[in-house]
Image 1: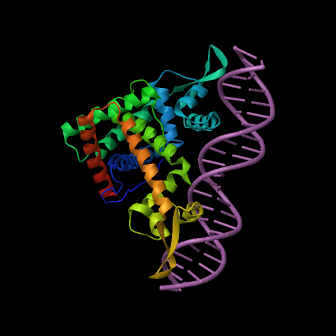
Image 2: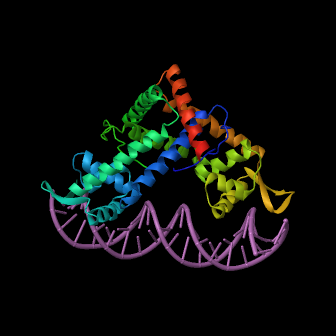
Amino acid sequence: MTDREHADSQTPSIQGSVLGWSLTVLLREWSALVEDISRELPQGVRGYQVLSAAVHEPPRSQLALAQRLGIDRTVMTYLIDDLTAAGLIERQPDPTDRRARRLVATDAGRAELRKVERALRRAEGEALAPLDDDERAAFRALLCRIARHSAQSA
Amino acid sequence: MTDREHADSQTPSIQGSVLGWSLTVLLREWSALVEDISRELPQGVRGYQVLSAAVHEPPRSQLALAQRLGIDRTVMTYLIDDLTAAGLIERQPDPTDRRARRLVATDAGRAELRKVERALRRAEGEALAPLDDDERAAFRALLCRIARHSAQSA
DNA sequence: TATTGTTATACTCTATAACTATA
DNA sequence: TATAGTTATAGAGTATAACAATA
């Protein structure tokens, strides 16, 4: 998606569908921010997703991670090739299954991810600029409930 | 976009970045909904965007609309070819510039768009399911302010 | 026989360039 | 000479299939 709709400075013109317009605008902005921030990483946004999973989540096989991130296992190979070439993650043998590789972050990978996450937190601040502190907290809380519900039913 | 991150049922693991996780989850769900709903239209989401603009906005040239929607003018050609073949929009000559074509929706196009927009409003309801009426209103208001700010600075 | 990871191939989508008709 | 729209070509990105190693 990555997709745009009524994204100019006018008031949205779809009757009764302000949410759709707002979501689309916000989605576009957020995607652009994330894309811009993770540009320095190999494979951009996807490199960030893999690195983040390697740091913050228990080790998984390539296939398991590919399925979770919704990307093909064949592109996962190239993705990890680039990340390992950059010294950010490693393929370690899985002691319980000699076919599988566990993905773990290197120290350099952890440091790099910290930088990216700092930038993302700054970007969040920019995205919520028009709200004051109370409003931000309220928005975060509501959004979080929606997201949790969505993630559960998925 | 269209991109995924920590989209499982766990609590988000990026420290202090709940917003990023929530946004990503919500945007993914919303993109999927819009994509699913506009699947019946020629060219899917993009077909919907063009049809929506043709119905709700003053007529524009192909180029002007392409720039506004952020798509290439060469793909706009194919897009409109398909939409006109389906009888949803028409290319009309611009009386002030014989090079340009104005895009206007047909009656069938307007009817089709109404159907899509009905489905979108239903989808909004699903997306906001975990919130009660007051919370929905609050969320819409906050989101709308964010989006307006974002659209203005774009 | 099924599965993980890799490689090779084919396909789709998008961007670039070239062409026409107007301005 | 520049612009709106179209067409043709090339490139990037993606999916499909086939393969080796292991279960």
